Length: 236
Ligand SMILES: Nc1ncnc2c1ncn2[C@@H]1O[C@H](COP(=O)(O)OP(=O)(O)O)[C@@H](O)[C@H]1O
Ligand SMILES: O=c1ccn([C@@H]2O[C@H](COP(=O)(O)OP(=O)(O)O)[C@@H](O)[C@H]2O)c(=O)[nH]1
Image (cartoon, rainbow, N blue to C red; front, side, top):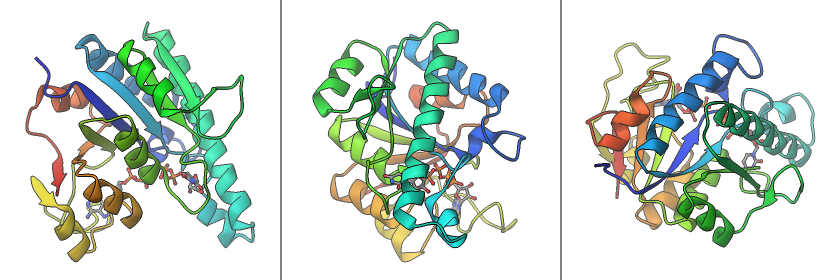
């Protein structure tokens, strides 16, 4: 028995770098594919939105003098590169995956519509939605929240490289403590930076819970789906 029938999994682009300084670490990519394969065997309908921070971030581009909109478009294209890499790794472990893009670029991926994505989920295909929201000034966390709500996922599972939501950034503060659960209002009041405010607001308004967990530990995704107490649940 699984706890969820349909999820939206957000994967961090930055985590895909693994031990590298840039780009895609194949070992990490294959580990992700294995973990996703495990849960598809359990029958969970899985939508995926993946970031692009391992390749390009619009904000860091504009800090170097890039036009922000062009930089964000480069960032969105980076998420397409990661999505193609993930679909190929999934194929390698025998999992059927389909890539949709929020910006028209057939035949790289099919142009996204809610209906086509749900059809793909219902067929049991891993449904990867690339290209962020298609708009600049947003993040892939916001794209994940949006696609989760649109495709009627029960939960957004945010796979990161930390064990959940902490009282402070655990990568910077060794005394930070982890919450087992926390409300969107508290995340906002305490100014916790685990997800941007646009994404947080979208989840809160649509009553979409978010589970933040460490995707870099093998077997964790299966634990999430089995309902084991892991990570932090953010709720309304
Ligand atoms: N209060 C917090 N709790 C957990 N993580 C936090 C917090 N504040 C900042 N972070 C950072 O957020 C990151 C998780 O977000 P994620 O979207 O996966 O990363 P990125 O934006 O680097 O791709 C963690 O690696 C952590 O450093
Ligand atoms: O709807 C979106 C999603 C992403 N981006 C751009 O794509 C980059 C990569 O996404 P993100 O930083 O969210 O990826 P992650 O942190 O998950 O690696 C961002 O910096 C933005 O420049 C965007 O413009 N609109």
